[in-house]
Figure 1 (cartoon, helix red, strand yellow):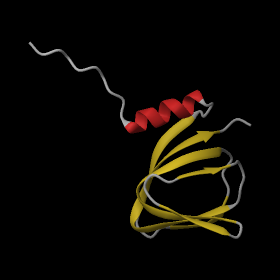
Figure 2 (cartoon, one colour; figure 1 turned 60 degrees about the vertical axis):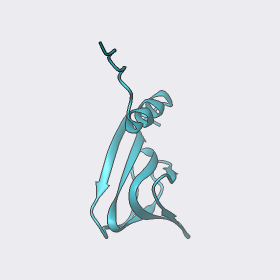
Figure 3 (cartoon, one colour; figure 1 turned 60 degrees about the horizontal axis):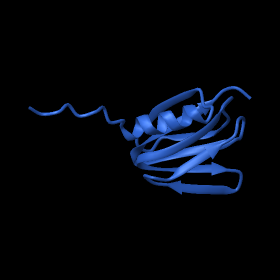
Length: 100
């Protein structure tokens, strides 16, 4: 007789649980098509995210970061930024905090 294996959280579930414990109110996985470009914009929420597949470039002011799997980024509410996704597109997990 084989003992049942306990439920093991996925990496996404761990990311989600940790973000919710830190006060984020929404956690999701975002997938973007290859070569998508989002011109400068803002969000009415703060974010913490981790790239899990593909690559992206995140530009804030004069700084552009090239992000690959395992890289993390944060943005405060209403911070102007632009995003560009690589030839394979990108997948990232993102936690959002809507309340001030």
